[in-house]
Amino acid sequence: MAVMSIEAYERQQALIELYGKLAEVEAENANGAAGDPRGPCM
Image (cartoon, rainbow, N blue to C red; front, side):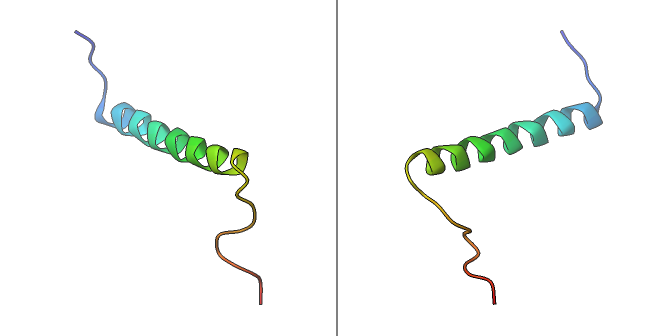
């Protein structure tokens, strides 16, 4: 059995979430999505 601190677990989960979001954006870019989703600058 492995034991880790709550802080280490939370950091690990945050990294997993971040990498998941990065993978989504990379997939969108690979499929031709371009531009800033926030829209044009004023």
